[in-house]
Amino acid sequence: MSDPVLIIGAGVAGLTAAVELADSGVRVVLVEQKTTVGGNALDLYKAFPTDDCFYCFESNRDRPGIRKCFYRSALLDQPNIELRINTTVSEISGEPGRFEVKLAIGPQYVDPIKCIMCGICMKHSNAFVLISPQCQPQAVVYDPTRADDGVQRAAEECPTRAINLDAKPAEETITVSDIIVATGYHEMKPVNMDEYGYGKYPDVVTQLELAKMLDPNGETGGALLRPSDGAPVSHVLMVQCVGSRDENHYPYCSKICCVFALKHANIIAMERENIDVSVVYMDIRTYDRHERYYRDARVAGVNFIRGRVQRLAPSSDGGLDVIVYDSLLDRYLRLHTDLFVLSSALEPPEGGKGIIKALGLKSASGFVAPHDLAPEETVVAGDHVYACGTALGPAEVPESVTQARAVVSKILQSRK
Ligand SMILES: Cc1cc2nc3c(=O)[nH]c(=O)nc-3n(C[C@H](O)[C@H](O)[C@H](O)COP(=O)(O)OP(=O)(O)OC[C@H]3O[C@@H](n4cnc5c(N)ncnc54)[C@H](O)[C@@H]3O)c2cc1C
Ligand code: SF4
Ligand code: SF4
Image (cartoon, rainbow, N blue to C red):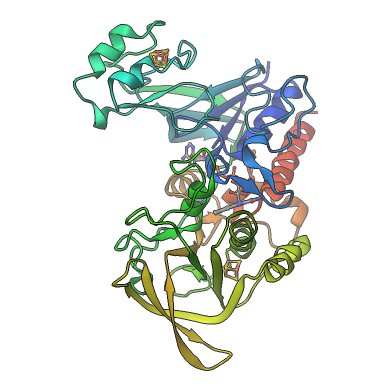
C-alpha cells in the first residue's frame, strides 16, 4: 500500500485536496495548526462571486445529506482522511517520494469524538469556548490561559468524559509520499502604520474584522455598532492598499482586497439602514467578472475618493476625524466616520515560511513562488511537493479550489 499524502493546512485549499484525494482512494494525513478546519473562510460571512453565505457555500461535492458547507463536506465520513488538529510540522527529512515528517501535536484537552456540544462546561468556566457555530470537528475548545475556578467542575460534570485537563503535547513521526503545502495567508495587522491608528483606536478595524461584525451569528447579531462605545454606526470609511503596493511593507497588489471591500460596502449600503459608505482608493482593481461589484456599489450610493489617508484623530463627539488627500480635486478633505476599515495586505502566514524553508522551496515575497513560465505547473513546488490556494499568494476561493484540484490530478497521474 502506498504511503499517505501529507497536506499542511486545512483551509479551503487543503480541505478540497484532502477530500478529492481521499475519494480517489488515496490516504491523506491532514494537519491543521488550529482547533478547527476552514481557515480564513470561517470568518468571511458572505462570499463573492455568488454572494452565498459562507456557512452554506455550495459544496463542490455531490454527496447525499452534505450538499452544503464545502469545507466540512465529506471530511468526517471519509475513512481515507486522518485529520490532525492543533498540530504542526516540526521537521521534514527523508527523500522525495518517502518523506519522514515529525508532527508536533498540541495538548488535546477536549476529545472531539467524545464531545457532544452539550455546553455544560461553558456554563462552569470561560476557558471552554465554541470557536464558531460551524467549527469542525464539532467540539468545544479549552484555552488553558483562561483557566478559572470552574474548570475542574466542568471536567467532572462533562457527561461523556471528553475533558482531560492534564493533556500534554506529543510528537509523532510519519512517512508520506507527497507533501501539499496549503498553509494559506494571514491578514496583515497594520500596527506600525501611524496614519491608520490600528491598535490605538478601537473604531479602526480590518476587513476580516468587519466581516465578523457583519455576521448575523456574531456578537452584535450583524448590527454595526462602534466598538469604542456601542453607538450605532452611521458612516463607514474604507481605505484600500494598506500595506500592499508599498515598498515599506509588501510591494505586490493583494489582488482581492478591492473586491472584498466592495462586497462589504454593498452589504452595508444595501442591507443596513441609514449607513453611508466611502472608499478611499488608489485604483479599483476588480479583475475578471468582479467589475459588477464596482457598478453595484456606485448604484447603491457608495462614495469613492481617489487619494490617500493622511492622518486621523478621535472626534470630540465620538468616532474619528480623518484627513484625506483627494488627488482628483487636489485638496485635503476632513471626513467624520464611525468605523474606519482597513483593506489590509494578505501576507504569508508565520507557519508557512518555516515549511518553505524546510522543503527548500523557492519563495516570492514569503509565499511559495509560482511557476513563471508554465502556468499548468504552478502547483508543482518541488519533487513530490505541491502547493495550492493562498500559500501561492493572494487568491479567491474558486482559484484556491481549482489549484487544489490541479494538485490532486498531478498526484493521481504520478501514481499511475
Ligand atoms: C476580508 C476577506 C474577505 C474575503 N472574501 C472572499 C470572498 O467573498 N470570496 C472568495 O472567493 N474569497 C474571499 N477571500 C479570500 C479567501 O479567504 C481565500 O481565498 C481562502 O480562504 C483561501 O483558502 P486557503 O486554504 O488557501 O487558505 P487559508 O484559509 O488561509 O487556510 C490555511 C490553513 O492552513 C493552516 N496553517 C497555516 N500554517 C500551518 C502550519 N504550519 N501547520 C498547520 N497548519 C497551518 C491555517 O491555520 C489555515 O487553517 C477573502 C479574504 C479576506 C481577507
Ligand atoms: S461538557 Fe463535555 S460534551 Fe459537553 S460541551 Fe463540554 S466537553 Fe463537550
Ligand atoms: S486589490 Fe485593490 S486594495 Fe488590494 S492591493 Fe490591489 S489595488 Fe490595492
